[in-house]
Amino acid sequence: MLRLLRIRNFAIIDELELEFHSGFNAITGETGAGKSIILDAVGLILGNRANADVIRAGSDEATVEALFDVGQNEYLERKLHAHGLDASRGEAEFVIKRTVHRNGKNKIFFNGELVTLSQLADICENLVDLCSQHEHQSLSKPAFQLDLLDRYGGLQDKRREVRELFSALRSRENELNALGGDESERARTEDYLRFQLTEIDEFGPESGEEERLVVERRRLLNSTQLMDATNQTLQFLG
Picture 1 (spheres, rainbow, N blue to C red):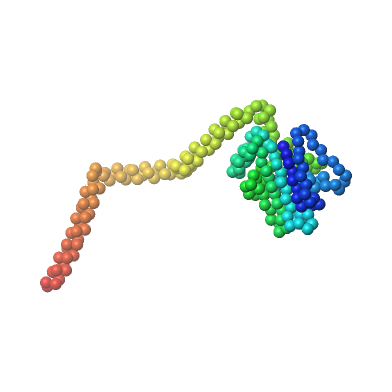
Picture 2 (cartoon, rainbow, N blue to C red):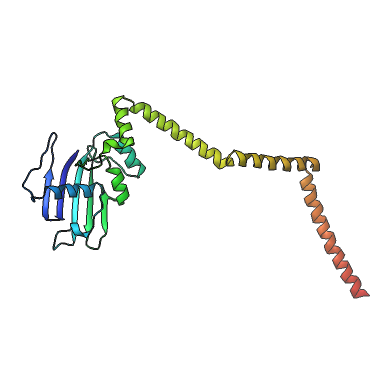
């Protein structure tokens, strides 16, 4: 869950820190008090796009930080692993920090590591579900539906086993392809090698023949040099 939210120089907010506890948390206030701005700040953490308009007047940058406690969340762990990030931070906690500058540049950090906006959006896809009348909800996403179904059926271990077997299969297929390409390529290579083997068999090489040929080549090279020297000597004598 979202444990802590810190907002600085965002819209009309100078500085605000909200701490959330287990159970039901409610933010109330009059119209214009800034409730929607807090949700906009959460959206910034979840990977929504932002521009310099969100920066408070008189400031050069706006910053939003969020502390999440995700517990044992295999679905999220797989996403973090896919992006080369480590989920371990204390009791499965991690911090996301996003800064928007006047020049339009964004800086996003996950546990101190710089990440891209697309990475942030993918990681935080199911961390918080912002629901309104026309808001897209995570329950409509097939990947999240499958995750819930596997949890309900207690199939996490089986799913992990299948994923590992599938990964091993893909690895072996890649090794096989690296050795000889696809089936048609392997057939062409086999035909070419058989052709070369047939030519070698027809030539009939003998054991030790290469060494004898090397010696013969050296002798012939010396013979050529001797003949050239002899011809030059005859020319001088003539």
